[in-house]
Length: 298
Image (cartoon, rainbow, N blue to C red; front, side):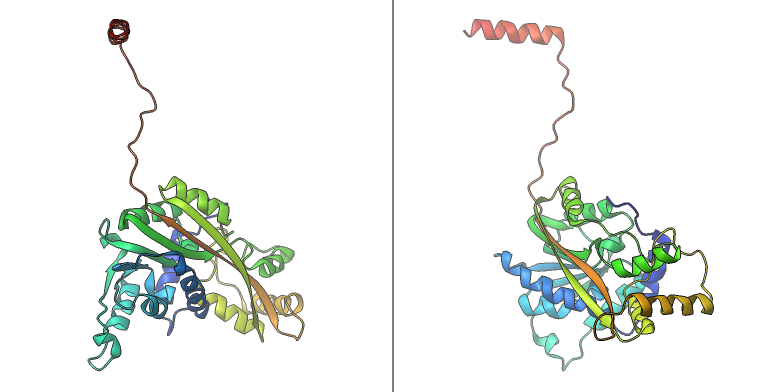
């Protein structure tokens, strides 16, 4: 599906670290807001929304604004993230959320039941999956028939400027090569989804210093490329990196600019088709019988 998939062990370490961050990434919340604007294509109102990797997806406010009465099932990949989501959803007695009539439950990914929701929402998590086809298979099993999938993730132009800095220095890549939206659409079809629609946009984020830029990239998940540096870097290397960023990424006005490509997609879970055998065997006697039947009926 992609040239380089994230290293599963690196992803697990990053998820553990992100579970301890004070807040989910700001960028994820902004993408959630933009993706929510695309929900107008859905005419039906789901009774249950599956919020896949909900804490880091930062989508609770966007979803509750559109579906205030829907049951929200937060699906988390690790126990630590499940605890974070559970803490966030345990509203105090005086909280408006307690009286809004909206139920929120938290489950870990393996515990999701088949056909348990009408909308599956996966904001900014597919690019962190070390086995995307397996994730799409779980998505389809979790959705009811005619259920709707909506997701977002990074596209291949993400961090293009930083990749050039690393390449010029002869260093390993700073991130995995993210998947083109057309390849994601093909993978959705292979997973059994119907009518996939893909879209993308480019966002340019700016920072006042290399340190601020690198700190935010760490909040977004860090480098999970299998060929990343195998050990910690020295302070001398860090100073060299910051110098290269300041020199090569400066935009008009002096701030440092990096491109992020955001891919959006949606698809339906269709009625399963009966599988057709690759080969059909008919005995010679059966063929003779069919020929005789055909002649007698003519």
